[in-house]
Length: 190
Image (cartoon, rainbow, N blue to C red):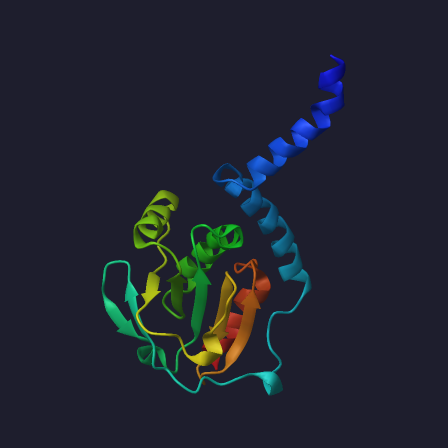
């Protein structure tokens, strides 16, 4: 009994660490990240000031969707575009996907959504099917324009019709918030 009392905290600590840093802990991490990131999204403005926006200097980027159909980024010139780099093993990516799915369902006719996976295609197809997501998923065939390069997942860019990056956000966010919807509505009307 004395041994158990002395070591119970150590046992619980290691069990918590093992759970949190193994695949079994992925849903827990995603839920924790979702709660924190969604609160900060509502507090902080993600939109880049007009004078600080960077314009894409190239649309030379080839993509392939999960059904092996090729497309080029060039075909989305003069449209509002949301580009999200993500992976199935990334807890912040998983946390923001339900919000993206809701946003996609409401804006898919007015905004181009490019969810660019950085992961094994079989895992991605299974993930999308298991979650019953309908948003389009792509893989890069060539490197993205330099203004859209990031070493972090998730990273999301919103690009206006003039090719300017209006939002560059690393980490999870509530993409289905009123702020984001208001911004997209304004960008669509430009």
